[in-house]
Image (cartoon, rainbow, N blue to C red; front, side):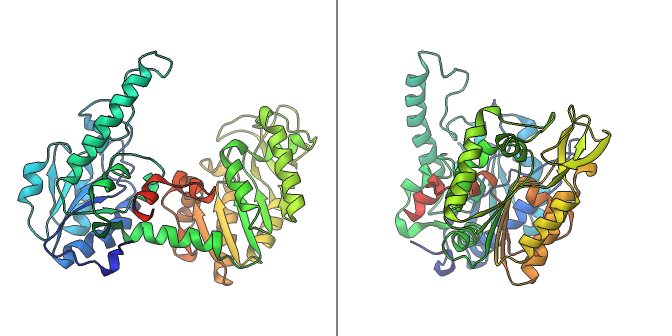
Length: 416
């Protein structure tokens, strides 16, 4: 497999799949968080400094028409130019032949939003799956997707995928395009390489004790990750809304807390499996409850399995925090995905912030710590701890699927 470190891009046109699906301020349309742009800089700079030219392609949001100004990548040009200087822009990603041909060594061209074309995702639009014509439309779209990928590939001599956040999708720009390049002319960028190195370290080279912290709303979202990690971890900490499916499965009182009633058997299965494998499972001991799902709700604290009728658990409380901190700070490997409560409301953010600080402390103690998932990353950033943990993943869904042991199309397309 070709390595970007060893490749000389001099005189080469390089098409780079980046993940510039960044948040925008609703009023000013300015980029409100440029983390993903900064993440791609090492790869782009390597190409330019070698004497090549970079053609950047990305999606933004989920547009349903072409064009759709609210999802135009033209809005993020100032945020890119802040780091790379003036760049060029192609207003139609599928018809950028002239712009690509005119590109000189050292220059950067940004293509318009890939998802303006349904061919990028390879799914027919405007037709439901239960429509008798859907399968024929789907087959036709796959052919169009292949043609779209070949068109994108025609702009360049080399393909670089540096968008880990979309690597779990078999899209034209993340997987299909790779078929148009010889093995020596396609590779991962620095960002994907770092992602894979961090995750492979956790999955295949972890030091004990290894603790997995799983939060978020639903057991069903994390079931396969948890099962895969049970063969590797010594400790499993469970928090967030999914807590109450486990508590209900164990016969506890959960009041009006979130619960997947059809997943109670699944929760029991996880607990039994963990026990059989010698994995210690830590559920919250106590919780902060609210009388409604509201930032200004009335609150009380109770044992997690004695939630008052009509109240819902929205955060872990002090006893839980103390126990979780103890387990985390004594670990040598930690992976964290998902919040401990309704983190977006300050009143219910204490538990998640406490976990963020505990993970940072574990890192200072010598642990390797991997953070993934929007709220976990937000908690790390909100507490100013991004540089106090080992690695913060840019790909929530992709990270979860990789942790499940799945083959990601964007990775397989290059690594095999």
